[in-house]
Image 1 (cartoon, rainbow, N blue to C red):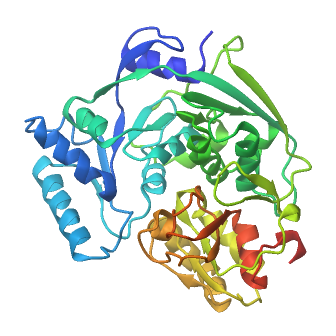
Image 2 (tube, rainbow, N blue to C red):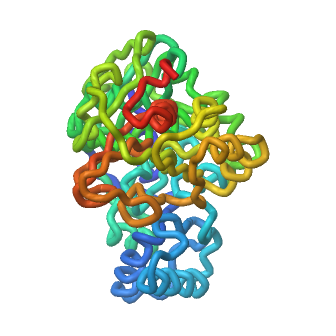
Length: 413
């Protein structure tokens, strides 16, 4: 009678647990990036602990402010590199490696049935692989660094079933925004979400990562796609260890069963300043924009860049357009297959792998009053710069908008 979450926590805690139970669970892999590792390390040192529980199960990528944007950032990163060396952390990915939520799956740490915790709210991305991925605060991460365990309240689960195939120029991002708009920004608070149906089974791993990445935007503790052949094929040659996929029982108990029909879905846009303020692109008034940003842990993967290149081929951007690959692996592949060349010929600016302007810290922050169409996951007031306006959309919609200079349906370009 178990959901995927109940089964993963039962394995991780060594006892049978159900939703609403409290469990002290063993963590399979723990992640902190340059923005949160410094806080976790300070808390870790404050505990008086000399050594981490297992240096082979801690992953630290530098991605938020890379390369360092000022002397203060450089000093903090210097301190973390020193601690990483002292502790013998085996999995450190320095400047240019990519965004943490892209690097972990690429390097084979996001595995079915595992409990993966990151000091970043979008760690729910790892649920795309049938894992329970979730974010925690820096002090909780310090506890994990010290003991390899953390207590959880086992979440109840919402089941989402999406039927039908996505149409031309309709992407996983459009599906995700549609679901966020239906569920609401707090509609899944401290719930897990399991995704099923034809639409989901047809999504690539990149699309599934986009979907699970934004589970937190509904308040969810985790978003999970059951592992299948697409998952196993992606992990072939990547997985760092053996894994045991977990699946919900037919009689598993769900608090809600949401049904979605994706066949007639249009391109979706989330209007400022709420992620769940979602409408069809046809409902957006002609809106002049100042910048397009394609990238982030939501939509900076190879298929996202390829889709943008498909829209931009033989076109020229009318406004500044910043495109940042999610990782070095993505950037290399996009370079080798001609995608980057197409984007550059269209007039786009290519940034080095990392988070870029997503958090309002680096490489593309917008000015007060400016409007940006972004493929990121959040459009909160001040997110990319105080006083700016962020419209969330798919890479296709963002690229089409870059050509016209206003928010545009990619099917019309």
